[in-house]
Length: 228
Length: 228
Image (cartoon, rainbow over all chains, first blue to last red; front, side):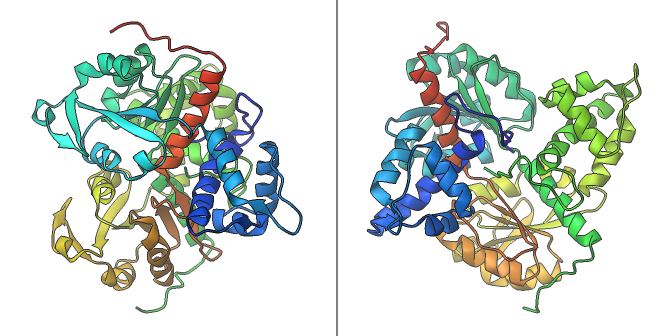
């Protein structure tokens, strides 16, 4: 779910909702740069990012970035500015705890390396998995977590365990100095101040869609598909 | 990421931010009901859900639900009320397109069946995967998607393909009458009015954490972990 209220503000006054859109702008701009596009209008960038252009201009003005009238934004400049803002100029060591289907998917996720993250550890509680190589990283016992997090100066811990194990894993990560946690387990985690938790809850995402689906059904919107 | 602005409102006036918290309340209440707990105070329910209790009371009042002073909320009643609001009284047919690591993780995800969703199809473009059984469902060619979506009256389509294939898959889903899409591909999808898209972007989640991590580093907050 990874919800943050739209009006909550980060440490330097940029709303969380803006911060959450920066990775999208960054991805779109990366695509433009790869195709050799030098400038982009706010309308084009907004449409490719799926936001309206007034919101985009406001977001970028919060980064003190303004386009040139009639020309637009310089793609390379904007890309490096957003990249710096997101902290992508350095590499962040990440551990994934829980090497079930989801943990495997995350470990094999191509976006890790290319976006400035380095997978430094995979941990599980099932001895059957110890020593297995997943995405080139050997699975280690979860009892190694604290030592590994220290040794590798882990910045981000990803929890992909069953719900029942999540808080305990979280506590070990926090005790080992990890201050950013991405939680895929369907459990609410308690953390001390200064630790950021983002939550991705697949069942909740489906339930939110079901809520809207039900409203659409109740409103009498019929399935509009034509025969295949 | 699955972002919706905090103040956007759904079709019946309930803010999207409230709707997004209903699955969390539902999960917590389910746990309480399973343990035989009959009533819960707003403070208890709020804490277990990771929200503050004023927000929780406001959310539930939007559902026209009010606790009894000194007693709290009736667990079973509140559970059925939120379940009805979320449309969990009926079963929603779901297809997953893309049977890579992530698609497999989603197919095997235990939350599907228990939360009112039924996996009716797994589709992929790679012939090597055709006929394979994943979570008891046989993988079919993606060219079967339109026919399957019609035949099974699919409500929710989950896109777990590479980014480059996502829009095309989305178009086929929409043409087949699917109006709710959960997108895991790192691509912005264009859909007509009346189609809801929720997006889960793993790299964006990590980048948002990196943003905060960088701010914490800049603020001079040192790693507080003790030696393992």
